[in-house]
Length: 274
Image 1 (cartoon, rainbow, N blue to C red):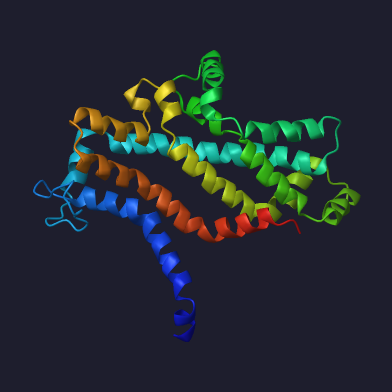
Image 2 (image 1 turned 120 degrees about the vertical axis):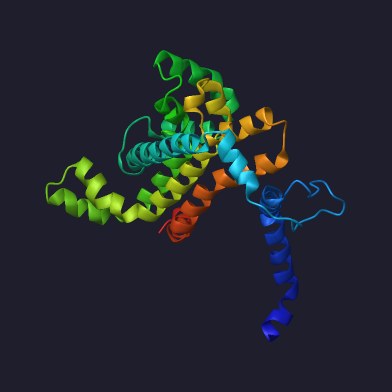
């Protein structure tokens, strides 16, 4: 109790920041549970619905094939996680352990690419997708997330923290580079891989702009596009839009809850070189 009284400004600031962070989500949940008699824009705001109901979720599921959109988003997100974890770990290992002439140039190009917004690369990536015949396909939606510069740099830092003596011992046993990467180094960077998986999953799951550009077949729509259709087809009923947004948030919250320990551990280990 004495510690609480001594540091009350710090705890007060943390509580205020926590409310500021989860406030939008609580308001979204409140809107999704409000019935027709509840005012959405009351002054002062009505946080607790007077007549809470799940009817908005039922109307969303009846009006849109949300489970089809859920399957599409899940396929895109899982495939993006697998591709990014594989390709980024291979590239990160090469930058951390292999010596080649253009290594500083490649590393600098990766850093520079992180400063470029996706909107700047959107047209060439779209043209590449059309050339490869990936329009209205899952692989086309995965393309921007298949290997990210952030993932490569994160895995480079992870591999760079592994003692070289382990690899030298494997080389003395006659183990090749591919097997060293797969069986010696990858098991040691599982926390960083979990961190990369969470970031990739969230980015692919919540991506709206790229699916909007690449797909025009409703059967290939992802959840963000499905939620966007609620605004257009149902005269912008914010209760239904909020219910659709809550529906799309559940898998992300579940994944983060399951991987929270690995996520925090990987973020800390990726930030400190041992």
